[in-house]
Image (cartoon, rainbow, N blue to C red):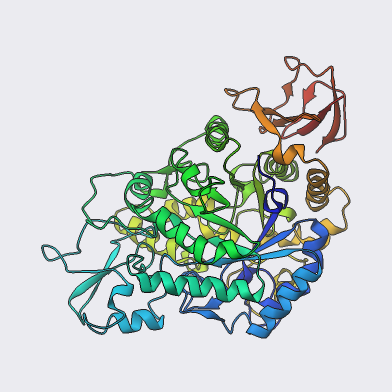
Length: 549
């Protein structure tokens, strides 16, 4: 097992628009982040992952970039960014940026040139095709609903957009595009950032026949049609060789469509590609044939199975990031925990899971506060383009709007994009103006000021576990074995190496459970989200960490 700083440290994701507003315009910004750096440092995390702050029309909240070299004025200036980077480094932390290069904004200068004519020098920066039988070139569908092709009458052709219509896919077959990406990488690396989170990176190589797909499950389409294209490893290795390897930085790739069968091709330590991936298998659980708003049942044995499959697939040669929520998925405690009666207990349990599995943990902003999903009743209160696109598609197909909204309550991306709840003042202390999206009404009871004044809060539980992980490298590099694969209520596993052994016992249910079948005579209980007890009865949502003596 190779040892690296990026395996031992912990990531904290900031979604700038919703973190902290310093100007009163209702939009979080860089100075707002700077004002909370001590808060982040005191939590005990090491790496800040910053979602996009580049110039953008914000059709997809910054993941549609119109200028890779400048900061969106809503967030501040490049001088603000430099101050942020300096402040992060001064506190002994690191900064990784979001790299979004599968697509750009349709307002990027490259695309504005590309669409002018078929012989424009920038035409081949994007993927243009003539229509077929009076319609799009093929039957591919966008991640956000509808066709993945948009017709442009100027040249009588369609361009590919796997996401929104304002996010045309870049053509990585064109070496000039790859040159441009390398230039972007080096610009930010030369500024001193510590790495990149690479957005939907397995999608950059297309299957050039652009054939219709007969697959009906969208997740299958992602894996077998959109991801893992014929040149994806060539392209990732090229940017590694031409930029990344010259710097002591980390790279983590978002992994839609990356299965256990191909995972090591992206992150094997001898591959010269990525350091780790965010695999999404557990995050896509419950998504039906039409995606997240077409839910199907799943249980904890499915989650346990997926973590085991990835551990077995990686072995000692590859690495993943461990996470249960981020800007694209619902709040951890609402999806995998119990966010009413046992909100605090289940939030603490899930943090123990994240911080004791093998992989680099990633904590999403507000998770350390126990923030939960928001339940807006009016579609007009939601801001996410994905939610609005699918609302139109599903309701036009006959779904009751109230039923769709109920699915949004469970799975919509705006669940994690409501402003951080700093205190119980107006707008939760996020902004002195009107927030770009409404604050979750539960900010009165769930906020940073309250948890910082409670020694038994989720925040301090995170801080304690983060410190414990740093002091015990067995929880980073040690082996892992699950002891109760088929139990849907208990998750029991051990981590060990030549020096020490830990046993983790998680009751992810609202019922009491006996530990009589578990041999504990050689273990001492050192951490629990309840009072330490020698009892063999687990409380609802109780998490215990034992050490072999």
